[in-house]
Amino acid sequence: MENLQAKGGFLPGLFPSRKKTESASVNSKDMAGPKPLPFFKRLPDNVRNHFIAMVGEFIGTFLFLFIAFAGTQVANTPQTTTGSQSTDLPQGPDPSQLMYISLCFGFSLAVNAWVFYRISGGLFNPAVTLALCLIGAVPFARGGFVFIAQMLGAMASAGVIAALFPGPLAVTTSLSGGTNLAQGVFIEMFLTAQLVFTIIMLAAEKHKSTFIAPIGIGLSLFIAELAGVYYTGGSLNPARSFGPCVANRSFPSEHWVYWVGPILGALLAAGFFWFIKSCEYETANPGQDFDDLEANVYKPEEELRRPSISHGDPTLRVLSHVSEDRASAASPILGDRAESPNSTRVQTTQN
Image (tube, rainbow, N blue to C red):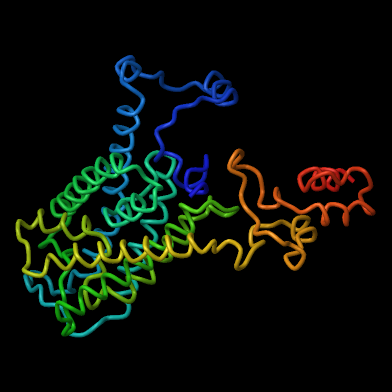
């Protein structure tokens, strides 16, 4: 699990360490910005960090669901004649309506996850929070705090949408198209598992393209919504279903589906990740994050041992662990400079 707690990447705000680097202190002196409040200076580091994460998750969840709910409200508002109060929706799926809702959710998640990942990790979903706690990427204490913030953010977002937009709130999730309870649970479970596993592999597992993980995560929600909106409302998020129910002061009998399904999906995704991690999946298809120089040096058919990521320095590449035979094989080209993979890479670049 060393990758999960690497510095930087998509989830840096989840870990309570406040070690200040020299470059950070220099930048803070050069930048003209607000000074830290004396009150926060007196708080213990873990309390301050939990509070900041809660604020980030509250605002992030609010903004994510505000855009998504607003788009859903527009898509579900029927076209009526002037003065008509009819709210009857046409029967059967409307592809343009489903596309509109899916795009709103997917793009809203991508943008807000990208904005808030440095503050709280950009989770916005209790099912995602649970899965990251189970794989060790998020401490359970932090998970409990952000869960509260996510639920409050969802309720606030649904309440604001209900107040701003005319007509009844039309963003609730319900089973439709002849979907029964069991089908609803499994649809929500598998769609949530797909979303959560995408987040784990693109964000929690560090790689060269981690910084653009929000794009893949947003696309993951987009395709999940395309598949699930018509049958279950495409919740994949207990907070997303809970907030509108609170705003409407009404909980349908199948509301439990939108808790059980996403939670089972989170457990499924976390369990599968534990399985492939215990099997050292990195060795099955190695080199996917190598650059051209590393790819040319790395020869898996000559590697007698499995490559491993350095425990001491998270910035070291997988190639930090190379046999002497490969180093000596490179020496005719690089001469005495072929001491290690890192030195090989540096010297070759200089040439």
